[in-house]
Image (cartoon, rainbow over all chains, first blue to last red; front, side, top):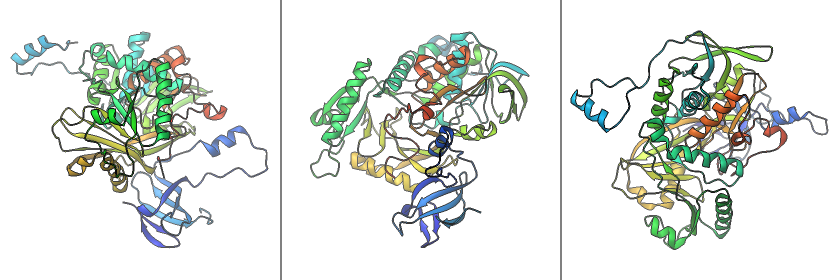
Length: 89
Length: 418
């Protein structure tokens, strides 16, 4: 069982959260001409790193806020959590 | 090579089984091969076997970081089926079913193929309609499919919950009678033994550290046991695909996720079919030893852990108990996990890449084991002829770019309901 520290609610069990995938993927800017390759990279292509991985989770059965979590994909150790609007440093 | 038969069994029994040949050798890697296959799982072993058998290419090495049979080929729930609706999936899988049917003879190795049939349960009228549609598509492609009503399902699996007051009543199901199971370890060992006999070097405990690429061509691979030159390299590493892709500066439409399976304590024969729950993601069969073999959803987040987490197991088994209440009386014997190469549309990739001489086989999601022979056969063809076969033409890497997705069930990297 993972324990995730929600920046709004504190330490909660994994059961309260749902997963939202890689948090480093940026949506191409609206209204700008972009290449097919850039769109592919946004929609489909993922690095899926082994090791430290920034990812989105939603505190679905809690405050319902989206958050960013830095987790090790091999050991599941969680290093840091941020609010969704905070930049990954 | 010693042929396995009742006579060799009797002969070796007389010498206390001390004189059996090794099933495959433990060679030191050579400096150069015609083809190097990275990944000694089921698909890699099958690829090497068909390279030798169908294309007469025997100067081949399989490089495996761990040991033969230690990855997903030894971690799956052994289900074999071709109950797909889309032509690309159906024709590919049905071609594989033919290979499964004669695999024990071809490999001179009893893979215990048991075509016991698979039933996908339906829990609503709408689901019965989609199953009728899928069954019709299957039959048009020459695959056996039978639509069962509630009473027909009850005849076959009376232990399922047919009471009136349940959340997901059984309306009926779609059965593929020719689907079934096989002993997964035997598949790996059988392919390894035959490939080795035809001259393929199976190199275990050999990790890939990097690649030698120049001017858009692959020249070889750097490993923990030295550099190996090869003009053609096949990547066949399932859940480790992203790790190797990073070394090649490639970003793929793949995420690595963890999938769990478990077995109960062994019980007397009760279930002679593979059954899947239609209102969630749960499947079950009974092994020859009597264990109930069960699996279901992904853990739901990127993972290389190779071991699972309890919330998903609890969720999956809740579905199992909803479907077959007697399961709640059984004790759990083992649980385990494997790391899956989840593609974005839920269908695999067997294709060439932008690097000349580098071939890609990945994205098997929940269905890698049953694809073992067809994947090996088509991947061997793709490598040997340097072009895809019509059977794997739909499994192209650029379909994500062109929009020709193969969204059989809409199951990609996301769990069924998340």
